[in-house]
Image (tube, rainbow, N blue to C red):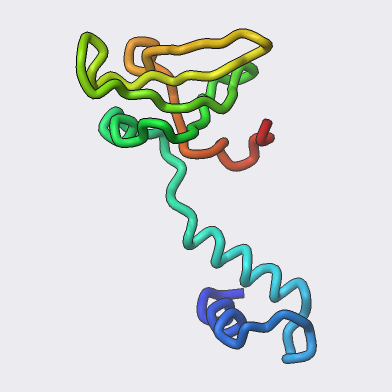
Length: 115
């Protein structure tokens, strides 16, 4: 299926086969739309992380990968430095992202299990 056909299917708001499209084509068009609308999932930059105070993020660290919350103080000794706060195997952590050279993403990289 090409992009033009996917747009045609979605514009017609096709929800059931019978308009000349199969379930497989409808699902493929929806998958293409989701992929096109999803933001890229490159590792977040320090500048992006500084704007994400209080937001969830994914730490990609192989077997130790997990979700956490970005924390950025507005002032003081740690002002403007992004940290990842979370809990892994019953232990709370708060890590300086830059100091630890952590790879942080908006969501788990494609193909990884969302835990």
